Image: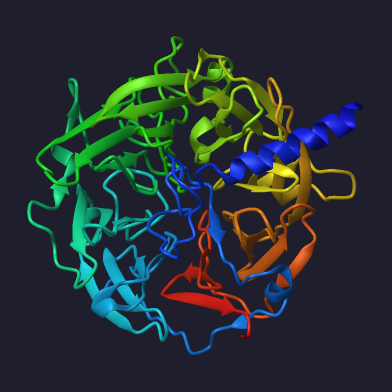
Amino acid sequence: MSNTRSLAVGLLLSTIAWLGCSSKGGGGGLDTSQAVLERNKHPNRDGVFVQPTLTKAKAATMTSDTAFVPNLNASTLTGGNNVWASPLYLPNGPNGKGAFFAVTTGNDVYALDETTGATVWTHNIGSSPTANGVSCGNIHPLGILSTPVIDAASRTIYVAGAVGTTAISSHQVHALSVDDGSERSGWPVDVSTVTSGSLAFMPPPQNQRSALSLVGGKVYVAYGGHIGDCGPYHGWVIGIDAKDPTMRGAWATGGQGEGIWAAGGMASDGTGVFALTGNNTAGVTTHLDSEEAVRITGLGTLADSFYASAWKTMDSGDADLGASNPVYFELPGATPAKILAVVSKDGHLYLLDAGHLGGMGGQKVDFMVANGAMAIHTAVASYATAKGRYVVFGTDSGAVCPAGGGGGKAIVSVLIPPGAPPAPQVAWCAPLSGSTVGPITTTTDGTSEAIVWYTNNGQLNGVDADTGGAIFTSTDSCLNVRQWTSPIAVNGRLVVTGDTHLCSWSAPP
């Protein structure tokens, strides 16, 4: 059998096996639910949305939903209604009707009618600081930046935000009823009181940008610093027992800086969370916890770790491993078969054995996907088609693309064929000229009719998931879509957040 035919057979078997695997990140069958309870749909952060009616032919006919007009203007603070998080959706929301959920920098949480966008309820978690209290940062007011997480069983949405007036006085995690926005008993949790060993959490230099996770009954919230790396901040993962919020714990990085700030959040295979750290800001010569992938279990136990051999060079060049979120997936026929994919700021795609991260230099694959020290700050996703498993993301510059596929800034899709270890190859690049955003994928049954969706200068774009060929580009734009946000797909609709509003597109019936 030829090598080409062997590869084709391997990819087909991989795809067939994948259909029996989870798209939820921790076991079970294919997720056909329309609920979007967290960033990128699943705990593994794959960003795969099963939309049975959204074929490529249908997608080409999409138009904006002009009757859907949400207004996120409850905050009285100037600029306090900006939206840096992706939306969520609950089919059985308040009064039994579907609702979208959105959050703002004014610390407002909204439930919005799925048909009209009218506000069903809004809840403010506290005053939004007009400054952070340290000498850097670029988001003011600074309230809720991260994508919340919903527990459908308890009908609770968990949100995290900075609270204060002229400076951050505390960082809080709130638990609100999805039905009316009321606070659950025992909440909020002031994480400013949490410690990791002898290290105390200091509110002003910390920033909460990373999407929340809910795994095994634990709410996980990660923290980094503000742009400019000022103050004695650390990377933190704080775990809170969802049923008993008095039970809480934390893991913090050993060195200053080393923040956990990727907007796409942490990934999970069902056991704790995988988090990625950034550069040490104190210029240490002995490795502490910079440029690292860690598995955190329980309420803050470090269970496993990997860090790049070039950590010192990455530290000095601000080339964070943690500039983008990790994504977990299973690849039958590969060694390892359970993979954590990690993209660094300086353009490396690392494939790690999720069961044993490997310590220093323990990656199974190191593949260049972009060139330049500041090439990638993004939200990573993953999907599978009949041709195999892909990892997809945006670049800021230096994209390594197939011949004729552009370069520089782009949406890049990398095919990960089975192997021991896998041998990635860049499959395609698609145009990107605006702020770097996170792509997602829709498919009719898990692998068929796969489309990668993203916004570009506020326009919604859909491209063929195997080729990158254009399928749809909206003629209208969603204004002020913030960097690193991603669309969601619900009942054949694509929904995007912009400052003060949500935008929606759907295909005619």
